[in-house]
Image (cartoon, rainbow, N blue to C red; front, side, top):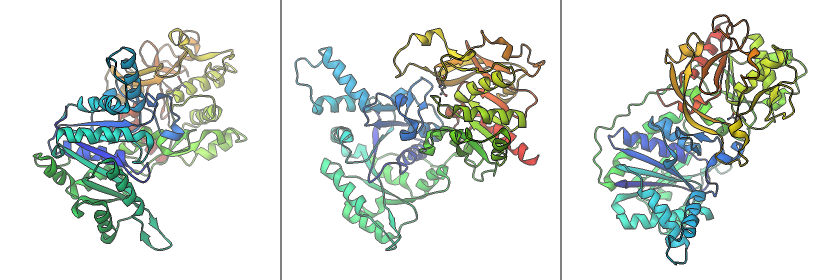
Length: 529
Ligand code: GLN
């Protein structure tokens, strides 16, 4: 059990940065010398985020142990500088599945199985299983959501069982600004606090998110109607760089205010925190297809920022399919210093991405292909250089004459979609003499995370690949392998690297993945040209 708990709830609307707040608080408390653990609770019924569409829910973040999580675990990893596991996430799907399984196993000894106490006990036992001085529990969604209620009931009960001075409740809300009347409107915030109180939770802190700094009269109002001390109502207006949030919380003395309630001794709190403050003005395009929200490519975008460059622009692969010729694709891409082809599933947009890869290869624009992006690099090469017309992945064209990307035997037997991909971190060997080997600083064995089903079909199409790193003869060089092809690259190109794994999941603040550092360097090199 954690000794103390901080529970973070959300009000008014989702997507206001509860995850960034929780991660920042975790980082701040860690830098105060406390042993901190985090838990994200997701009240949705999915067992994990693996089957969720990134357009609606943002990216699926993969942990070292192969768990498919919500993107908040990515924030926790980047901000805390530490890897998370499946234990750092709890979904309603898991909770109900466990309770129903226990019922079938006869574990409830004849009892009528109910939301209270059986479901709440299942939730409490997961929260109790956290081991740390301070456990930060972020409850997803907003107060008032039907599916979230049982989780709020569980933490309310737990706070009574453990004693109120072992618990801090922080409610993160949003205050909109009304231009027509020139004022901040606190009513939705007041109402969401009322909802919390009706459930029996009196928040200790209200963190008010807003577009701009709020006037103190509005904050007084939140304190008065919310029944919270004025010095525990803090305003967090939007910031340009989310990595400054731990510093903002520090300046607001939040660590001390929380420690006062929890009776924690915080030692010299100094943020040991290095993030790029000035971002290099290189322009990187992320050629994707999940355009509903930038969150769909969160870890890639953050990896680029942590490597010191401006946020990449997400551009639509599908629209590129309609360009009349390669020249127009080239002129469209020529405003960018580097390109990234991210992971993805399904055939939509792939022909556009393949056109981009062709132009980047021929015109020597730095390009990084990740997972699906790497598979498309192999397809493009097979079609346009090796002359295998109609080469494809069997994911997009089961009848292709040249299945250069294909399912391996072990995957063919699997019929269901949830949790059945090649997932999580695995070791691979980096090939000496390649660019990738240099990027990894001469490390031969590296461990990277995966999330995919299809593999490069090297056995059937050896003609695509150079047999010797030095004499590549214009073929693709395999630069890392495990049991499968893990990475390919081209010589005589400023940066043409495809990786079957996801380097973006490994970037931490102060420690961006070296592949992104090199991509940014290549992009800078291109600028000077
Ligand atoms: N759809 C491809 C596969 O399953 C790539 C997956 C990905 O990009 N994450 O292999």
